[in-house]
Length: 193
Length: 156
Image (tube, rainbow over all chains, first blue to last red; front, side):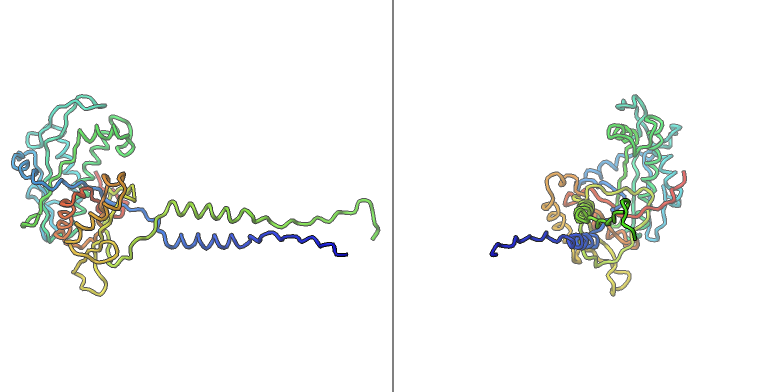
């Protein structure tokens, strides 16, 4: 008569766990951002003033002088130039395919993976930007210069390694960067820097 | 109805088992927690970054610090401000900012520390040059001019 009725513990109701985790998920979706940063990577020179001495000995034929004035007008060796033509000009200047005596000197060097070839390691692109020029104009100029270099490097990479520069491994990229090094010297006119 | 030998047994539809649903959602949750990163700053400046063709994706998020340069709503359109972390700052603060950012990074990230400059396209270059000089003096030599990709390539 007094036999205890066996109590059955009810199973834990887990139906709402899904809702709770959904809420967490939505919270994370809202507070986090997935946008990836894109940009033009550049390397600044170290802060000492060694670059100045170097510039003094640059020969006329080795220098490409890009100037951006306060009205965002681009001149290349004192001739007016548009942004669209700039990358082509940089390319011709750096490559100097015909060994033009007016274009930068090249030296012959043994490059790992590529072998003996002519290396354009004397050229300098001198960039002078007025502080009043806009950032956009400066950026477009940088972009065009980098485009010129990238095109040259891509061509060499396709010829040597049969794939574009971006797809090469680190060793191959180093070899290509040795043939076409980026030599850009920046100055700001009117005192500051 | 006649009771027959072939009487159909009544099938009972079993309820859908949702026990694994939370696990599933947790998996998605963890995925998002890993691939995304928290929004760290409230933007106080408005900026419109330039468009470029040669832009690259910025790797190693943990080693990237950002300097924002842009307009502040309500201020005249030709005055530009620098934002570091959550507040507006001046040129003089950049050095301290780089130092503190560097101190927060672990030793793997320190050598590849990159400063991403997110600046409006109308900012005068003089301002950018000053920022660059400040970065140079604090040995943050890797910079990244933040931009969006323009689809049309420059013709060769």
